[in-house]
Length: 176
Image 1 (cartoon, rainbow, N blue to C red):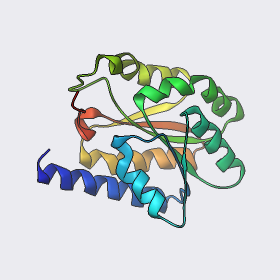
Image 2 (image 1 turned 60 degrees about the horizontal axis):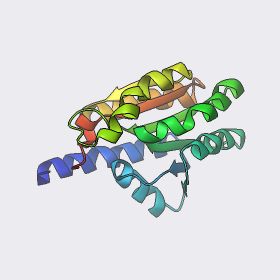
Image 3 (image 1 turned 120 degrees about the vertical axis):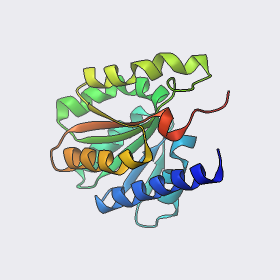
Image 4 (image 1 turned 45 degrees about the horizontal axis):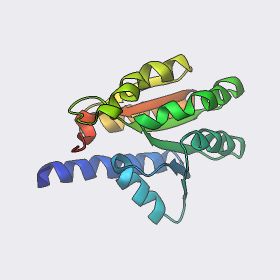
């Protein structure tokens, strides 16, 4: 990646973190992922939020439900390969009518070289939709803030569960 793309990438991720904080998100649940590295690093450095490293993504679904019950706001950061781990737990959100905001760094699409990433990468949106989540996509840096703003409004004001897919066109394909 050239320096210009690196700066643009950092800018949208910093703007995204600031947006989440303006929406009073105080809990960041994540499984370590390079696609979310800037958000994770910022949340770890921010004394006003709690960052929780998960052992598996479905723990983040329960964390988000608990945050809502306690009057806080959470975001679940994960990679598309982890979305499959959450399917059963998403029934908690649907049955309990808990809001959920999840940002998903996509794999198994544009420029992917790892054959193991394709099955879940291709299934992510349809599976999440089948579990009742609204799925939005951001493919370019200028789409991230308006898309996540819309998602945050839908979640924190409308009480919905929304997944924003941060595509490989946006975050770049990993070398394999």
